[in-house]
Amino acid sequence: MFNTEKIIKQQARQALRGNLSQLIAAAGSVVTVYLAVQYANYMVYFSLKNLDVTQIGLLSAETLFALGTAVMLLLCSPLLNGFLRASANTALQKDCGARDVFFYFKKTELYFKTLLINLLVYMLFSITSTALNVSMYLEKLAPSVTDPAVFGFTPQGFAVVFAAVLTVIISIFLYMFFVHFPLMSYALNENQGVGRCVFVTMGFSFRNFGKLLRLMLSFAGWFALCFFVLPILYVLPYFSVASLLSARWLFDLDESRGAV
Image (cartoon, rainbow, N blue to C red; front, side, top):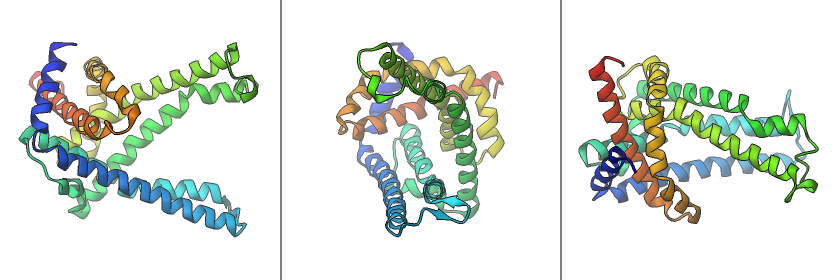
């Protein structure tokens, strides 16, 4: 493990003392709202199915369900920013409250600014991840390869697994380029402009890709433990606080060099 990442993680653990329960409550609020939105939209979707309604105007019920879910999640997305805000307060001030999760709902202007930032970040990630979805191209170009009947220890099966793993790796890299630092930057300073937060920070993301990759690799063991679900309660706040500490250090370093 690199010394820098070791120091950052040690500082994160120290900052979590006395704040872990608040961050877990904040994260729980985000997850609860997400599940509630999904449940409500599924209820509407299956109600339409039970009524044998498959077409509403020019859109199918499935399309309306997807659009409704996306819109509702976007409207609730400032809760995620609020969780990161709580993590930033923990990282910098060693103090946070569960109510920090509602920080971006306090003012109408701040709320809509947060929505715009989240929408732009999501669009950048979604468009690029779709364009680089190896599994999708394999399914479209060679549908016989993805036929479940040929799965197993066969060349076709290995091709499907390889494509899926490659797609996941690409998605992680795209998250690192387009999502991570813009959201960290906004959590640290909500007064910056939308363009600076989303687009200017993109160059910062490219310059510091290696440093973020090393931090994420240092958490590989913790991420593996999340397979058992329960450790997520600790790993999510731990990683978010460490990410904010790392981002603050890198932003300050870039600012001192006049790069940002």
